[in-house]
Image 1: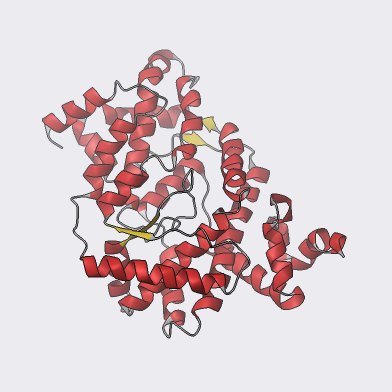
Image 2: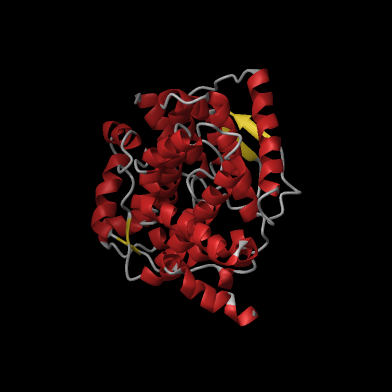
Length: 362
């Protein structure tokens, strides 16, 4: 990193607000790279396939896709720029904790001006790394703070198809189905607020680790260390430790497992006759999920919210078993309210969920 760039970063530290989003933007742009033009015909194909995905998903679910929006095919730089603040609910609750770190000594006074910079750097690194991996808006399991455009990151989708020797057009449709399904799930009026609320409750109980925080602050005083941090997903992570938050953590994990599992269940039903390579794509996606990207590692290390591969599978198996035993109407019942969602134990025991949710209605 040049001295000029480091000086520019230092200047950016004095920005208002709980998170230094200007610093985040500089780091995100640096990591996302230069814009990559998308051929007009390819962008139109993504939009066409997304419209097809909307029609097919509407055939297999009662979730409302009537207000589905057109896809927005973008490159990595455009996704990073548009989504930098989309995940602000993951860091803004931490701002007050950083400002009152309880670390004592000089560190205590440093946290007031540096807290927003630390969080901004964290988000910039996370978004920049994610831009090289994420296939679509809902690919990492965390929704944006508010409903918005349906982004498809074209260079990453094309690279995923090539790296796994898959037919590119089938992969494009598969990703479109994934994004449309998640869009329909989070279009339920209660779903997004419920998830964001769970995250807020979880973050409220987290505690800072002063020793780890002191170590991370050193990277802000040396250009070489700061550059190393930008290329290490753990470089500015590990700022917080998790206390006894197990019940809320399990609620978040169950929520994410249901969202991903139901999406997988619907996609398999909708795509079975359209995607001859569905099995190979599913296997490739499972391998991908088993190896979190640098951006996902940052989220996992920062918040301790790792969603393991077996939880994705557990959600899909739960949906299949409920539909097999009690029918599609019973499965759709879980989207009626937050109380109707299965908890982590019920994902292992669909009968217990049915006894709690279905039997009272009979």
